[in-house]
Length: 123
Image 1 (cartoon, rainbow, N blue to C red):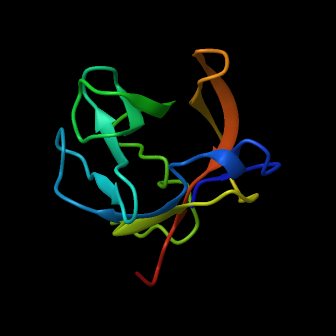
Image 2: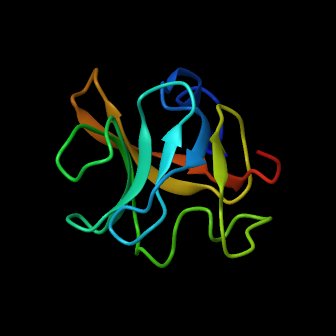
């Protein structure tokens, strides 16, 4: 799950929700939101993990987390056992916050916000 520390920013993030694993992209696991058109994937072009409106290098990026392909955001999460079939982005506090850059339409820029990732065991 991805959740904001205070809920204020995460509470209005459209990309919150459950993501299920789809095909690999850039030789890394990729995930699709179960209700909206958002994808979580590793970008070879930018060397970061992205949440975007389509599973493609060139497209609108809603949020990103700098990191290597071998170190996905859920790797440090409790319950990770080498393969992750699903994650949940949730507007609530969660362990292990990471500094995600999230697009702020009001300021027309990315701003860092503490979010965290948890692996879903029972999808």
